[in-house]
Amino acid sequence: MRPDVWMAMDAAPVAMWSGGGPHDDKSSWALRPRDSRNAEEATAVTPVQQALARLQRPVTSRNLRLISERSVNENPWMKRTLDPGGAHIAALRRLADFGGLRVLEMGCGEGRLTAGIAAEAGHVLSFDPDAESISEAQRSLPAELAERVVFRAASAQEIEIERGAFDLVVFSWSL
Amino acid sequence: MDVLGRMLEALHPGGVVLDLQVIRPNPRVEVDGRVVCEIDGEPLFRWADAATAAVDARIAAGDLVEEAVDDHDMRKHYPNGADLVDDVAGSKRRLLESDVPRVRAIEGQVVVHERCRLRRLRLVDGDREASPASGGPLDRRGSTRAVSRRHPSSS
Image 1: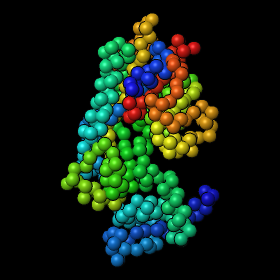
Image 2 (image 1 turned 180 degrees about the vertical axis):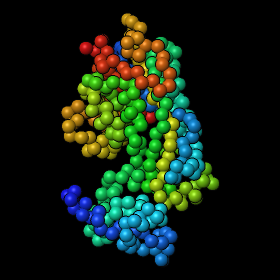
Image 3 (image 1 turned 180 degrees about the horizontal axis):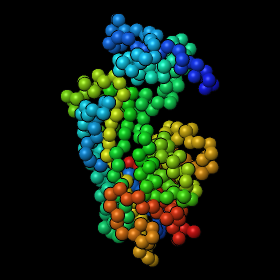
Image 4 (image 1 turned 90 degrees about the vertical axis):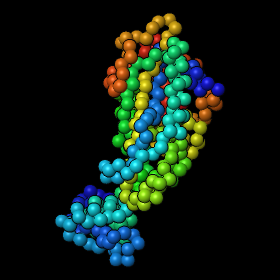
């Protein structure tokens, strides 16, 4: 959606949850003036309801759907998210300069750290025994980093690695 | 199989190992900045202890040199308490039985704070000792010293 459309929506009344909880018969969605949003935000009872209150969107079925999808995508607190603040990649960068290095990442999982490493490294071989996680890691890797990263679905026992071929090995909760 | 040994074989002499592990104390469950309870992390800590012991054994054997340690907090976000309970149930962590009902009843966002330790180690080059320019002697806790861009022996 175009930014000006979102701005126009910002001028509209706010979707607010009214009531004590999801099983409260008196609970309902309602349009409220935006100056009441802080108090109403406090009464929002689920993450989706809280997001709708924060995003201040008018109540239409289409907007509710768009808002919900957009909120879940843009707000990590609406879904299970490991390390949304990037504490681990920040720690890795405090202790190592990956610039141009050949990196072996053992137990990469869904590639949570891979993109951050590959952004600086020369080449990254990331592997994990979970094939589904590797597929997700491949999907989530930014296209501009694809040439630097090779993913393998393999265990540490199985993977073929050339002796002495790497400058740096990363174990992320995987040793 | 010695997984650590196999991974070290992939490194050239003088190469770097970054080992990230969870450490004590127990993870904290928080809602809006208030601590709700702790998660018993002992089963996972025992796993991490074994990994740390394997690394320490390599240090004692003179294969690795520990150059830096960085302790930091990591957060995990859950959309609600029920999701946290489900996640913990399938992991090497435990919630106290008495905490499960009230955690499950949390309908808003839940954050788990976990303490982690990252260690930087260097594979000892048999022909020379660890280079002072690339870490040198041990610098403990929260070091920001960076490893050189590329070890001379890798070029």
